[in-house]
Length: 378
Picture (spheres, rainbow, N blue to C red):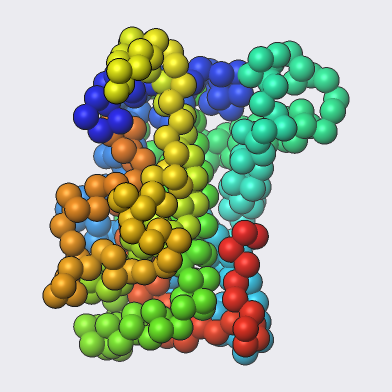
């Protein structure tokens, strides 16, 4: 995926991905071609994950994070997942559309519904549709769930497209749609909606689960939580955190890396496909073969991560307590690898760092009752 990305950079052209992506018109499910390169370039330009753009993302994120953490002011036990999800969605709406919406806004709710139902579209129960796609019209439970997911995604895409095209009172944050409108290369409406899908859902589902897992891990490992708070107090004190602070906070960085490795929310990467006949370790692999990167298996392989089922942020620190170089953690691939690496990786990293730093600056997290650690499987 890294050294021979051009050979392994295709996508599986199945019926479910074709229907979901409206004819492979998304970055995620399209094979590399002119349109794919254009969509990816537009998305990267619009997300502005570099230079001054990072400062804007940081400001947007902190506003949403502070609103989210106000909901943590509770003395009784509660599940923070919904609050985290609303925060992540709020950030991606501002970044992509340039406007702020409340959690009760119909579009916000449509995004939540599409996020909730999308995994069911690719569940094992619907896998037969790749072989016999016309069964989608047979009224059984699995096809009902699949069709509900597709309907939710289409409604979300249309709502974002209509609002973005008609919104004349943009904030001073130029969204992804500004990049689309200023792009000299033509993309029709269906491709634009595809970019919408990629940025909105890909930028929401995984980040929400990753942050929720980090919250659970701080509850389950109070000594780790204390080390994080000590570092926050030493580096930041009571001022607002900034993304630049990460350079002086190796333990927080190591905690985030270890959380993504240990939990590996995306156990399997989106399947790749070979774009030509290849040979791998003596095995002949014909063009069009599905390649399923097993990220969970990689992240729990003791050849690369000794004692892999132990949560240990220190594995990413050297003897001086500094973060180990990138080339020494090359087997950690939570955002994929190669030419199909997630386009929103930088945005996700900013949100995770700022959220966890601000959260632990304000609160100490405890389990519902002593001896009751979080249920990670749920």
